[in-house]
Length: 354
Image (tube, rainbow, N blue to C red; front, side, top):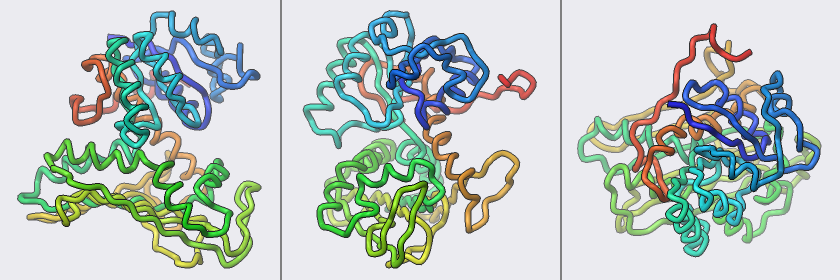
């Protein structure tokens, strides 16, 4: 069966989503939304660094929503609730790269999305690598451990090669330390906390409380990344921890460490990827890293911008891979706990789009 898909924006993640849609044997790209006026009327392939594919980007929302598509791949720089509601009410399923359960957006916003999905008989699903795909790995790991007590995740990466580094200004990077950044990060990165809900749902953990902790690291010298200044004494790294508690015992812990280079104060060690642990009988330990094609392993110092750019691919592909299951799911807000096993789709090299 083929599913018709509209790509909503063609930014960093959206461009990789387009490539993923074109490579997926069950998906057909039929339209694309252009957020900026200069992209209107341009071929989507050219916008994504590909040969022309015969699909033009447009800002005519009514035309997009009435073209008979099955799903919208929603990947703007920042989600717009009104926009999402309009898409769902029009009867289009939606997969989103910046959404997990919506609880961190507040009861009103989440309620609007749930109501819109029911009205349009559509499903809304969100993912990425972490938060997002990681609960799959947790559930598989916990399956071999009896009486497990806690599931822990650590994401730790050096963001200095990341082309969109300036995005972290809204989290306080390049600015003096201030207590306000704890609340800012808790709100802006709320989807990580939502990941606890999905893991708990998949593993049958009755979470009684969610806790959040924020720590910052400063740079001792002036730095700059892609033209974005990070003066001495300002924030150049952070550690955020979300804990899902069962009474006073942590049952799910998500720890996220981001740094801009080394020699920060404090200078937390990096694993350059994802470390996942299950505490039980037996304990289970898994490390997940990523490397570009042709690079078999990634050393402790990383591989520069080429590896950093993989963040866009590993954010987009869990969403793309889920589209068939989401289109076939019952209406409403859906998570990995609701969907069948999701896998990638193999395409022989000789048949891949050049």
